[in-house]
Amino acid sequence: MTDKHNNKPKPDDRSDNVEKLQHMVQDTLENMEEADETMEFSSGKEKENIKAKNERREQAVEGMRQEISDESKS
Image (cartoon, rainbow, N blue to C red; front, side, top):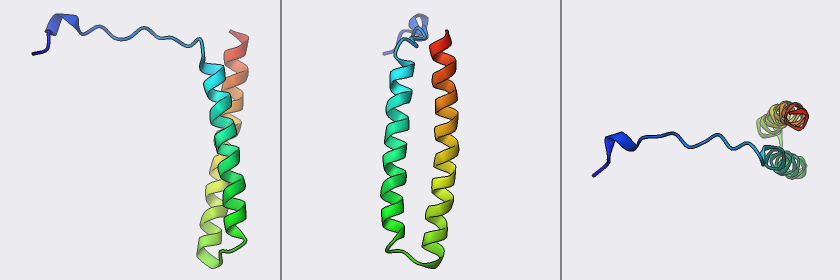
């Protein structure tokens, strides 16, 4: 049975955001490298899909790097 009066949100702890973001960037870059290797053995539509996904990953990395920069300033 849940107590309705104890629904407090967790405190917003951002102390390790930069570290988490850096790890996410590294993982994404590794995924891009793996996708590039896979693309060598792909053809046609599959190759186009991999290129498109890597472009989205690159945009995500840029966003994460900007967030790292913003977080490290605060």
